[in-house]
Image 1 (cartoon, each protein chain N blue to C red):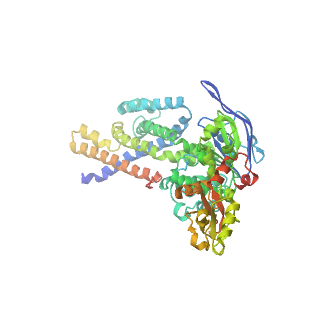
Image 2: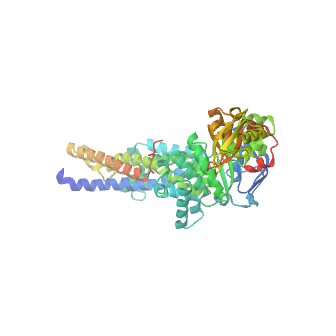
Image 3: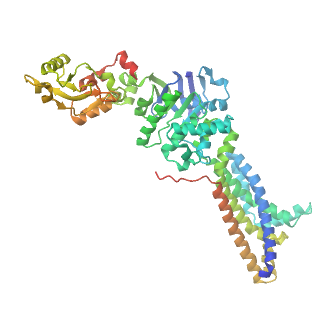
Length: 212
Length: 378
């Protein structure tokens, strides 16, 4: 294993690259969608419904579904379908948490913001989004941890990543590769979660330190 | 100045139209505090929120400093009206400094100017700027937060301030302190303030004028003392409470009802002089003053009747005195505590200023048509 540290590192980078790029794009799309649907209960029900259905599709099936579609642009297997799958799976936690965070902003905050003369946009940028960030970050953490697992399966469609050790371990009945892959995926998930928790805390305003 | 003409709000609900505010006409003169008072659902908060457009009005007109608010963009309008809410509503993601500077920032003030203003305002409410500017709202106590809530509304120096039960969420002890601070501040800043409250005592203490609402109708709009002395109808009388006459005690001060400043004796005067003065005053006691006129002691008629000698022999210590600036509530409380029916009145330096008696107080309270001097004292 020690001899293969270089290879493990390379696979980890591939793994991180798939999850990082996909969740990054998911934040850029999911947060605005989550904010937009706060304007209409009906739209929110529809969007959250679709996002929930996507999550219920087994990842292997989703990869399979994408092969014929993406083959038309010559990308049936590999990096692109893996990123797209992770992107789709990330939508639900991110959209839902954004939606919940914005709708749960204390009405007093909204009234104060409006009463002081903020426009809808200023209210969103100055107050509602900053207040929603900690909750959105929880969604991001869920998406990241969940998709580090899903990305392991993407090895089967040739996307690389730590899943390669697992798939090879299974096909070659080599427990060493299997265990290496499994442990590496777990460690990556735990480390990522803690890192994002740290970021989340940095983005959360200080809590009460007053003893009344 | 805030003026409302036929202000009406009709809410369109599934159960039909509900008239929350019904043709309200009133005017709050510049620099005065007007408190909207009434049971819940009476339309007082709706009235307040129509002024800054948080609730759109159904009909009628609102003028601020003579300007029709319909002609002003609502966002622009709100930036020029201070607004304080019961839940305080400080933004937890911003420091105290940034919270105070919200409106100046919205108005595009220079940073240096608005930050300097924030520090000045904190000092105005007795919070040390260096200790608070960089802290977050959750790190402050409720009372401190509400002080910040009030100065945030004042940051851009708006002429008009709207407050929706601003002191409602604070414990009674802190509330009294903040109310006093606020009144002191108002003496300096002289804003036109409209203020919703459900606390009659708060209204009596703070208002220049009280507007009482019932079912969306403005029932009476008068100065607190007029309201307590002559409620316009039974609803207002019962709303103010059976003890409304006692509530007037806190509106009148000792100076309003004291009398007999010229009746006093000094230590060397003879007893006959003291007796003569008591008879003239119709009071069985007289205050003995020191050389420079400070209230020192008193004589009782029964002690000196038919006696000879000097005043020094018969004088008794004053059980307590009333400061002329105290309200009658404090003076009455002092009387009850010492089981006396009168007190000698003194100024801050202890100089004798007259008598205050239970009889004079009850006469003042029963007077519905008070004389002009009482009216202008407030």
